[in-house]
Length: 149
Image (cartoon, rainbow, N blue to C red; front, top):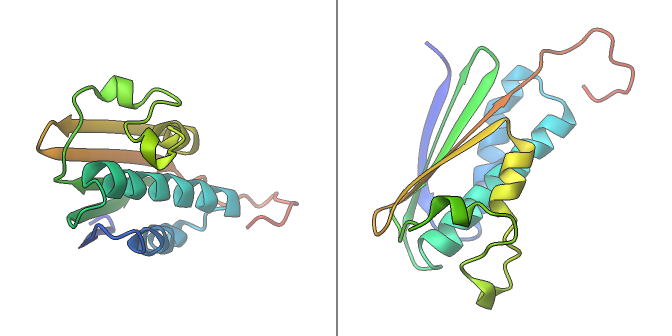
């Protein structure tokens, strides 16, 4: 059986750091580089922040996070049952934000796509959003000279 986790937590901003730590600790069994861990940390942070700010409009709610490892591929899903999105492609455009009042930069999905190998978003208006991200962790190389591992 492939390693996996399932976690649910309150949609409170302080839980963003908790979510990042959980996923990075889970991925650590693959001996990722520091850069791979930082990429994962950033993508998780953006997805959880989106669920808190946009999904629940900073109101109380629950976020579900699932992860699994299969053949060095990390898959993580962040799910909320918040307001959902009418237009997912528009929401994924660089610099688009539905919350300019909060001085959001509109780069959350762009960052997720930059740091992960794939990002899939499904959303139902009034029913919530699921963001599924995947990143292949390269095997440790015997030839590394930069000390990253």
